[in-house]
Image 1 (cartoon, rainbow, N blue to C red):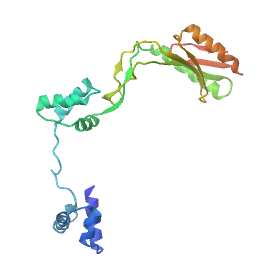
Image 2: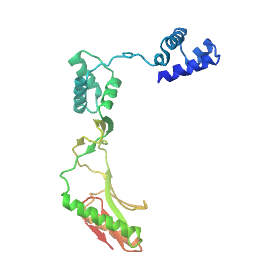
Image 3: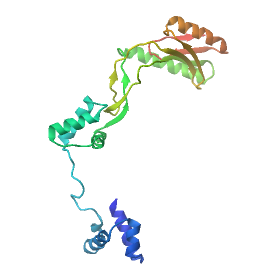
Length: 237
């Protein structure tokens, strides 16, 4: 907001601040200060605003920006590839920072990709499970039961899911693959109390049952345990 700076400068000048001090305060040259005073005298307050057409002209038009977005989708982790395609197509050599600024204005951001899962839950069953969970949460709030959530994760040498330029609110997916890993099964309540069980074998039904059997002797009221996956049933004790 340059006009605010210019107005401030004129106010200080009217209060008797010397030109040399004004140049130091606003970090400007004598020529710039002279131009500010002249435009104020000739045009009044209109002279404080920037003239139309000032500033650097955009490198790309709207259709070129749309093409840059498509190239960014094709190479979400390597904007250097996008810069190379721009140079080959239009003879322009933009920096990676320039490409970043453009894709940000086109509703894209740098965030982590997600692993893809097979299939989607049936809508009716999902809604039924969601309603059941709400009922259990109310009982937990009333102190009638203890509600716990169960899920498992693992650690291995497969690289983490990378980041890339993607549409805001949308995620690129990477096919999942299995390998030997250290598995951790966690049981946590809504107060963030967590119990963990470590296994170097796959988390199958036998392991889950063994972990639940080891956990339930520690509870002292009716307990409901819900798996984090939509299709898993609840276990009562």
